[in-house]
Amino acid sequence: MIGSSRWGPPLGGRSLATPLQFQSIAHPGACRKPPVVPHNRRPETELETWGNAEVRVLLSTYDSRGGVEPLVGLAVRLRELGAEVVMCAPPDCAERLAEAAVPLVPFGPPVHQLVHGARPPTPADVPRRIAEVSAAAFGKVGAAAEGCDAVVASGVMPAVAASRSVAEKLGIRSVSVSYCPIFLPSPHQRPFPLPGRPLPPEVTDPQVLDELDIQGYNELYGPALNAHRASAGLPPVGNVRDFGLGGDSWLAADPVLAPWPEGAGPGVVQTGAWMVPDERPLPAGLEAFLAAGPPPVYVGFGSMRAPEGAARAAIEAIRGHGRRVIVGRGWAGLALIDDRDDCFVVGEVNQQALFGRVAAVVHHGGAGTTTTAARAGAPQVVVPQWGDQPYFAGRVADLGVGAAHDVAPPTAGSLSAALAVALARGTRSRAIAVASTIRTDGALVAARLLAGPARPCGPQARAEVIR
Image (cartoon, rainbow, N blue to C red; front, top):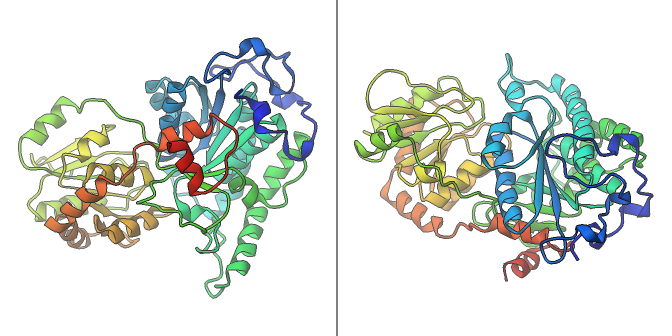
């Protein structure tokens, strides 16, 4: 039987009595069950699919498009296996989830508004935003999780910690998901710095760094988290980092692009990247542009703020190499710089189809874009800004499938030098070779992991699921 009872009792064996704020509310897309069924369990008569039980999974994230898209891939695979899926996510992703027919319970302010507001966010904004996201997550995730068998949480820590707290309260399984290994604690890497809390550069001892990292998580995220946990009748969390990222922890990244070394840290299962096959045709105008000449170079920054002048620098650099240009508008609103016919601008487009037909991809280095370009065999120029992007820039360079730009505003000259590497014949050959090693089954592996009890962690766990 697949169900919450198979995944064990709540942490510490505490009571599952559900307070008012966690009782089921009627809102579109919530996992549904009769409210009279206690302790988040379903009567035997409701068992329908996936072996001998119907599985209901809540996917929860507060992130930009790049963090939502992998969960769409997981949702598709879960439904193929007979599960019912609902997603709690920011309202920005409503259109994308509607395309994939994934029910959405929106929470929190639009991410676009936070990233591309009148001014860039500052460290002074962090405490208010943590409180805002934490409150929204406890409320909406707590309601949507009623009747579910598992919660899969990704995105910013306040949302992840709230989702795992909800799962603890309901006595169901929770999984935290990261899309890049640098965000997971390990003695083999320096902790990723928290907003406004850089680690002292002179400190190199792994144990001291680990203690400072835990302290930073507790001070930054602990007050809001533990206030809401107290309201829910849950005990305080003493180690916020390990509560959010530890336990049942998955790395949804390709093992070639973003390897998790064996022995790098306990409790991590690497599933591979979660991609959803994109069958959308390219727009007619884009098809005509592609057919009108040799393969162009694509440039786009996804949902990021693009560096000032990035579009002009990229177009001038690409033209300097005698190439045509496709500009991805994205959230940054990149635009053409003149009306010459060697450039074409696109909005939302099937990158899986497009990247296989370009000479190179110039982008910000998000996990999804990097993986899509690598799978397509397209040489890359990564212009990282923050977060995991410098890591993926380094991996692209290390693998020989492109060039890593400095974390600095690009110029036509700096991009031209990087393009010289990406457009070299040897880079193209290497990119094609690496493309054949990129796994396409990550979302299916994760879906199958959710089909059974929590499994042993490590590479062997993934191997068992693949078999």
